[in-house]
Each structure stands twice: as C-alpha cells, then as structure tokens.
Image (cartoon, one colour):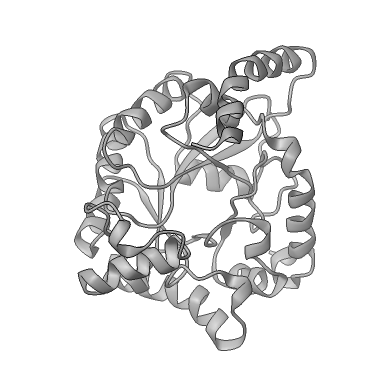
Length: 292
C-alpha cells in the first residue's frame, strides 16, 4: 500500500464526519449515484454484503430498470439520492456476487467484454493482463482463480434478474482506436451479447472509465448504439446529466468502511469537477448524443 493511500484511509473518518456535517448545512440535491465494482474474489464478496446492507436497508438501492427510468425522465422530487450497483470486466468472481445480491433482492448491471469470452484459457489470461490490466500485471502473476465469465455463467447472472451491459468488445481504450476498429469495439459488443444472451443490451461502460479514455467520436457511436453510457468519472447524476456522460464512483471493497462511505457519499466529487466538464463537453460535440 502506498503512503498516499495510507494517508487517505487515515483521514477518511474525519473527512466523513466533516462531509456529513456540511450536508446538514448545505444539503446536496438528490440524484443517482452509480457504484463500480471489479473482481469479487475471496473475502470481497463478504465485504460487498457488508457494504450494500445499509444501502438496501435504507431503501435507496435501485434496479437498472428504475435507474433507466430516472435517467430518461428525472422525477420532479429529487430530494433523495438513489444508488445503482455495477460490475466491470466480466470476471468470473462476479458470479458469486450476483448470487449474493440476488439472495438480498438486489439487481445490478454486469458489464462484460464478449470478444474475450471464448478465448482459450492461456489466451484469455494473457488478454486479461494485456487488455483489462493494461500490462500493469503479467499473466503469470494473476491470481490462479482469475478468469472471465463463460456464456453459461453470464446466462445465470441474467436469470438471477441482473442486467448485462457491454464493456467494449475486447476492453480496448477507445481513444487509441479510430475508424472501423472503433466502431467494431463499440457496436459489435452489443450484437454479440444480444446474440448470445437473447436480451436487449442498452447499457455501455467504456473501458478504463477515465476522461482520457473517451472521445467525442466514440461517444457519437455509443449514443447511436446504446441508450446509456457510464464513465468512471466521479460525480452525481442529476437532472441535466447526459445519458451518455454518466458519472460513477469506483468502490474498493478492501478499503476501510469509512473510506468506502466517504466515496459513496460523494466525498471525492470536487477533485473530478474538471473531468466532468470535459466529459460533458465531449458529449456536446456529439450531435447524436445531444439529440436523443
């Protein structure tokens, strides 16, 4: 663990108290916060249960269907903030997370990369290292249990009541692609997923999620193909947030509970103000995205 991360975790309880006091003085308008999780290996499933329990008990968790309705036609009364759970990368460990959530009556979106599903085991592990971890981890160093969901497992997640979304065809950084390669990475992901699951795919989450991994050209294609696009740029989705410029909070399930709470309540929003402006600006350059 880096020194910076240790400092963040140490300060989190104090920042959380300060944030809650500030919200009492200046309440934040309601809206939708989308939460991002990745692998759920080992004790991460238990931590997921601990994390979602208070959200479920408070009644603020919403299904993908309810979230879609709110984003398509924001309600007049937005006093309360709702939360939508999403999982990226299509890792096999997410199956147990899907089961755990289903036992609690919670529905989520699982974003998968269909172009990687049918690879042979060795090729798939190399693709996970190269594409999903962007070369930061060698395939030999991956946890032995790391693999991607099979089509049968994706089907089980779907039968549990969850929604399947596209995370790109092969988890490519969209700003590194152009022309037919860009269109294929975005559009083919939907057609392959729909052919294999039999369901409609309306949700897209672009790979890596940061502001430097998306472009106006990519957003134009996404908006012509999908109803919603989720980024990894932190912030609240409120009335006026573009459906193809959705903000989201990545949650580290192994972080201290106080830090997870700080993140989920928007404690890091200010740091991403410029990124949100850039994301909205890219969407504004996309005629299709602004017209739908």
